[in-house]
Length: 116
Image (cartoon, one colour):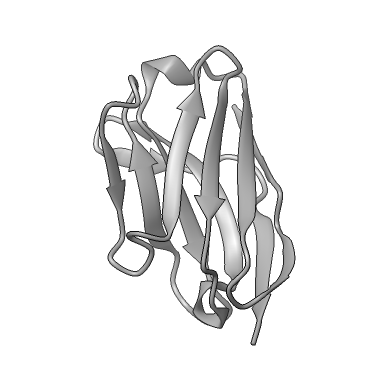
């Protein structure tokens, strides 16, 4: 299983980015998918998730109202639209899938850097 996250980069505060997660070796329509992030010197934290049918989403309080998670099961791809970015959003973002009660991260993340 490989989850390749892309779309990160350098953006000014207040800007937007759209992250993409392309899955291989995994049929994402069978799983809840999510995003995590890890800032320098901090522990990895949950950002957002979307259920298999995309009828239910969940967000951390820190991104609620600014980020939107979505998925396209036909393309085996998950997205994270990030708006109103601030420097506290600077982190490596990882795509993940849920196996039972556990989140699994397979593959490299993508770096998002927000300048003030």
